[in-house]
Image 1 (cartoon, one colour):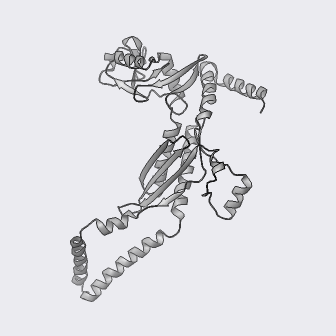
Image 2: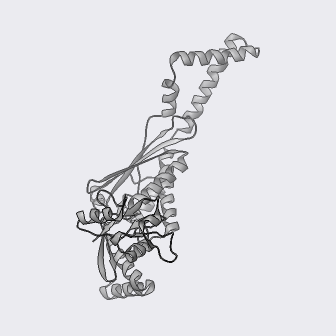
Image 3: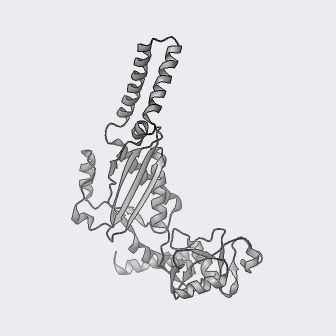
Length: 330
């Protein structure tokens, strides 16, 4: 697409969203794409220690195991079994349980399942939320014909070529282990390492599908949420969301303390209009949601989204008992 066509597309987008929000959306489009994280398309998973077997072996003392065995044999004998037959029956049941668990773990299917559910769940979240720009993608740097050949031969893209990796932001990899509860739970960890050296780690426990869904939600929140500092175009001017000193969003007992905190990082509190417009963008499009929190304003006032009649701008005592949230802009 040449520059003339690109300019026309941007102009149409600005007209579609109109006025201030159109300018903000275009500004976000220009800045968010540069921050998009593209990961290697395959998530290699390594199987860890079977925590269920570990718990079975070491979760109780030897005397506790012995007492349980004696109790089971005694129960069988009370039902009429001979001592030898009772011992053999208990041992046979234990062997059958172990064999069933081993059969369930044969092959490398669990890693494929976890990867597939994480990626499909992440795509579903993006379809539900529909942010203007997607900030996390699994980019396939290989030619389509190569991908088709790999799928035909049932191969996975586990070999990472250095030249191809240089085109990506980083790689994700993980581990899984069967949970100590000895039911159908797994403990899943996912690690994301980026070119710049940043690392992100996520973990969840539960049924495989539930754990993978939880990991996908964590990925979305980590990479799609507004990062500080970030920039948006507002009323034709560039506004930098600095965040609060020490954290993206913080809270204070008085508006005056929030003003001092912003001044310490050479920034200021947002105006009522800026708070509202950035809230329209929301947490997934470069803004900050107001939720039902109370936000500090200059002049000792606060912004209370739940008290809009006659105005959401109130005195702090009218929001008694609630923390006063704030972030800084420049």
